[in-house]
Length: 246
Image (cartoon, rainbow, N blue to C red):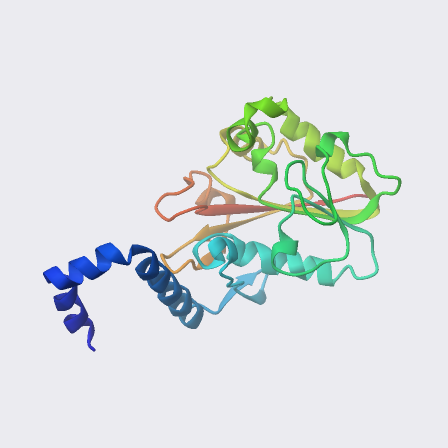
């Protein structure tokens, strides 16, 4: 059946009736078609002159958001750190691939997940690599809204800066801390990035450039005014922050 024939059928009374009675099934069908279409059309992106494959998964609809580039980059750092002591702040990677390292997440309950506020986390040993995917933008910002004010959540903006400094102190000498955050989501964090208040060793930026969830590495100036959710859903600009401990 051609696309023209499908459209003609949809606008008939019978077509409308079928759609009305099968909304969930049709929604899942379009979701599957969208996933397959993007997966077949969009293959690779470049980060620091290295080619990566986009990370397409149905969980959390990575084909529609920044997870598509965050995960390949972070997984590359993990693969280069085999045999080293690793910590993830915010439980993300294990939803896609099983990992054998420490995970700290203040709220999410799960096997192997340590439920601590990172500011209160005091492990017996420090780490060689600390990673975090789109987690720090929530600290001191929208925690109460996301997880309910009944949990005694600290929503002071400066707890974010405290968390970043605490994370740096959890590193062994020559250790690395790599994290991603969306631009335009947390205004306080955006200001810290703009004014170089995070005291990072390196910062890299990506901009979403199409409705097919294609991303391009750019300069800060290209994403400094990015809006979360506009023009595309979720992040339209992304920062990758890297801190090297001496």
